[in-house]
Length: 304
Image 1 (cartoon, rainbow, N blue to C red):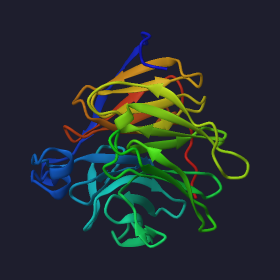
Image 2 (image 1 turned 60 degrees about the vertical axis):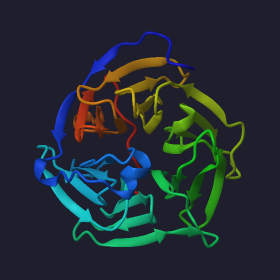
Image 3 (image 1 turned 90 degrees about the vertical axis):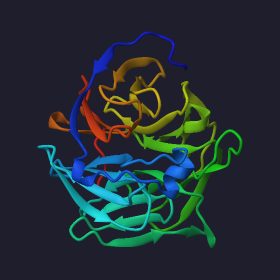
């Protein structure tokens, strides 16, 4: 369903912004490919909370992982030669990261050490990993986006089973980006950024997928980016160029539009805070983290 019906607007506030000491305006290989060669001081992504209420996020062009405590204070956790994007906290406190250049990584937030988890498939390098989602049984779903789009709809979605088996679920997505499981973990939602849509991917008992469909269509220069799920199966969709997070009911009908109070590059989302009902949003144009209180809690993330 396209975003045509009016929906209540939820306001945001700036929870915290990247301190000046961590801002590094420079041209990088990433900015040359993704920002027209502009000098950028950061590009925040991958928000996720640990059990202590600390928010972790990535800075793609500078290869950095940050921790932001509940008071909004920033700590540099890791800095390495890579381009980290998606991030999830595991049961042991380690971070699982999808890195565009280096594949799937584990990072120890205590000392910043980086350990490869999965760098290639069948001896072939990935096109460029983007985001990930964890299942309660330990499976990891992740997107291999690269520079795919409508001109080359060959982006991939994988599942790395807890047993170590790697399944290719989709191979025809125009720029697969954020992804999230519904509360029953029977359906996977995938943001197809350059198609400006969100795909609904039913997961079959045999481990395959069937009857993949378009759940939502959007518009704009970029497209849907990070996704999060509420406890009542509403889908939160961060749009990377419209300065908003759109919330769709399980039926596909629009519920709320969460408007950015900062820039237009609302890249990703995660639930946290008291009652798990505050949505935190990375706004990458200004290097800010926004927050908005919703009338429904987020789906608790499994710790695996």
